[in-house]
Length: 105
Picture (cartoon, rainbow, N blue to C red):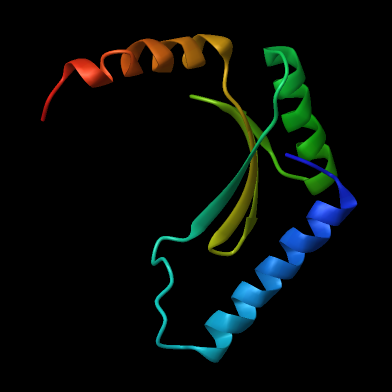
């Protein structure tokens, strides 16, 4: 997640180009279930949660603390979300993935 003005300008321009392309090419499919753009920040768990809280403040999005600590701002079928994954959840994922090479499908 960044607030760098140059990167933000490029990102927003890319979104506009995508929207224009889709509008100009109605035969190109789009997801029928919507899209969520997820923003992740680094730092300690406390810092990651603070980044979600700040995003919620800036966007008016509600914060939820389920599987992940997150705030989601909906724009119809598209959502912008700030997500903080707890250290415990990250450790569980890392442990689970450590078996990935031991299993052959």
